[in-house]
Amino acid sequence: MTRAAVFGAGSWGTAFAQILADAGATSVTVWARREEVVSAIAREHRNPDYLPGTELSSVVTATTDPRAAARDADLVVLAVPSQSLRANLADWGDVIPPGALVVSLMKGIELGTGLRMSEVIEASGISGERVVVVSGPNLSKEIAARQPAATVVAGTDFDAAERVAAMVATPYFRPYTQTDVIGAELGGTVKNVIALAVGMAEGLGYGDNTKSSLITRGLAEIARLGQALGADPATLMGLAGVGDLIATCMSPLSRNHRVGVALGQGQHIAELMALPHQTAEGVKSCRAVVELASRAGVDMPISQGVTAVIDGSVTPEQLTVAMMSRARKHERG
Image (cartoon, rainbow, N blue to C red):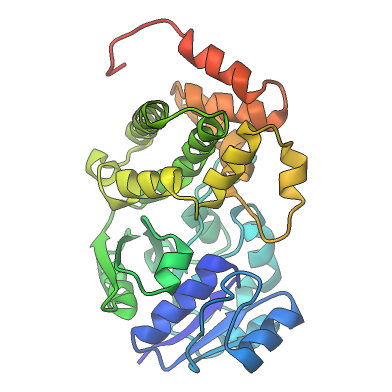
């Protein structure tokens, strides 16, 4: 039976803790920074800041002590904001049991280094064979409501991926295993940036033709970057690519989509980022994605445009004009 630790008490970390409990874990301990979150999970079996409508299993407990969270864990799940992962691992990475499998739920590229999250975990001293990535169309609120969904569990060690899949399989959560960690992580990261663009289009009042065009051309950007970095093209046509892209770009439950809509409606990024509990990973990772693409010699105009909007150098309206006035070319270019 599984003893699990989940580091990170946001929406996805909390929902994943419930998945583990439903999959038969004997204990699931969530590490949270704030004592009020720990107290709410202990007293009410709820996380009122992120999933207030979800009653958590009695198997799920919480603590602010990372050592207590990780004690005797067979599985350690990392669900902290991507740009804080390195600092977090420096603080408490040494408490992760040496035999535990390590699951990354994070979807981002590290600023400055261009490393994917699994690479940051490896850089902390954890063997890559122990690291498994979970990615797919997994909107936290729907998962917490136990609505049917599928996901990709990817690891360079296929046996490790299979073991994690067995630990998270439930009647409503169906994992598919594979070994293409690069594709799974790139799909999960870049889709957040494209979702910002689609949200901006919606905020500007544009309809489904515009949004569909952005999603499709966004997929082309993901595929080009994936090809340059060694991803399997089939991964990006699957759950961790197209599946995650559609869900994140089209759903009002997606924070990246919501932030994009607000930007299109004229709100400033600083105002949006000041709101509590509204981390949109695309805002943090868009520049890292563009820098990674530049080093790989890959053209990503939508991602570049989103980054320019986030930086304040262009408005969403100006981005629309720039995108529509680009030189014509073959669709596969």
